[in-house]
Image 1 (cartoon, rainbow, N blue to C red):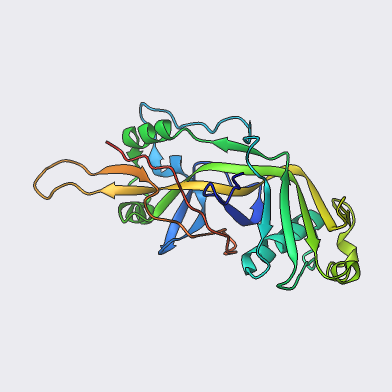
Image 2 (cartoon, rainbow, N blue to C red; image 1 turned 180 degrees about the vertical axis):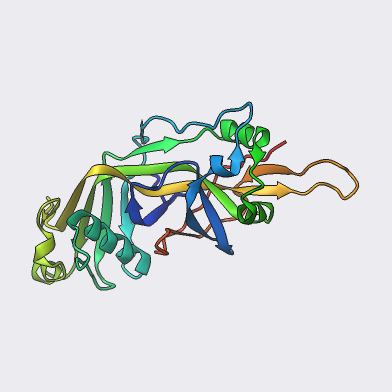
Amino acid sequence: MSTLHDLGYTWASLPSTDIRPLQLLVRTGPGVAEQMNTDLSKLFVPNNVPVPLASLDRDLPAELNLSQKLDATVSANASFLQNLLKIFTGDVSASVSWDKHASVDMTLNNARKQVVDLIDLDSYIHDATVNKAAQSFVEKLKSDQLYVITEIIKSKSFSVSMEKGTDAEIAAEIPTQVATGKVKIGKDNSGKLLMTANSDKDLTVAIRAVRIFFDKPGFLSGKPGKFRLSSEEKLDVMKGVENYPAETLDTIFVNPAQ
């Protein structure tokens, strides 16, 4: 059974309502990109082909495992849970911790996805006009530093189960003040500590993205350069606008322009 990670998604370390399809990411180093507060249509101005629309919410495949075992030794996993608690409790001091021997599993409840059709996206980019007034972005575009989000996974409910040496040790690691309101703490059927968080709004927790490449024309060709979409380079890390790190994002769609 495939997990989100197996299929090339990354967990956003700060789940957010502000992460949407067609947002741009900027490459800041080998395999590293950061979220930007702008959309593709601001850089590629539409002409005859309209801006592609994200799909309506879709159910995820039944065979997809929405439970993810979190490596207790990876700091990004702790960061994800810390930020999840802060969002749901509204308490910036809320925290959760475990030692390297803990067994931690996170499950998305009733998760859905939104996707952008890659053929529509490819057609749009080749028909649109680049906004040359956005000079700093055009420079990044022509140096192959921009990605565009093509798919998001979102959910209103998350469950985290933890298992360690004794119940007392686990319970002591989670402040009692966060076990109120939209965050509930109890036991699951197997006796593991279970933390469930529920939101009124969908939070994006994982994404896929493709990189925009600029194919420079030959020196004497007299032809304009072309853009193409690809996932040829493995994007290892995505950072949000708050510079929180996230786990591996492997884009697996390849869509070269002709």
